[in-house]
Amino acid sequence: MSAAFDTINREVLIKILEEIVKEDELRRIRFLLSSTQMNTRLNKADTKVPFTSNISTPQGDGLSSVMLIFYYEYALESVRKIIGELKTPTDNIIPREITYADDVSFTGPEHIDIHQITKKD
Image 1: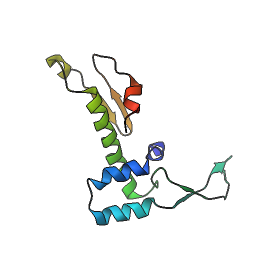
Image 2: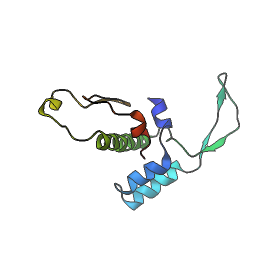
Image 3: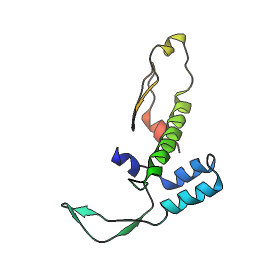
Image 4: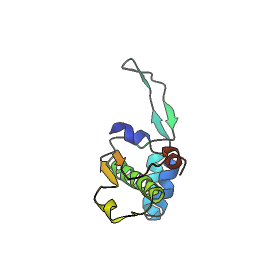
């Protein structure tokens, strides 16, 4: 699940959180995400050349897990809108999505182009 934290676009995350959390909490989250310093590791040795990152959330921080949940739920909601409503009564028999941690699978009776989904915000 560690790679899941690396997929978060901070700008998108802030836009999501602006609609959910109060300004005081949002200010703290912005501070947490600002000026994150990272090191690279090559052959199990740190390069000792820090750089500033503007993607991902700090791993090991308790708030990062909560932010990941909000981010993924937003993404899933976007996909649900593209897939659309159930069309027939038998659609209720097969689950439309199966989610576990940071993995998700969608099922349905019709083909949906994955590129249509990935082009959305």
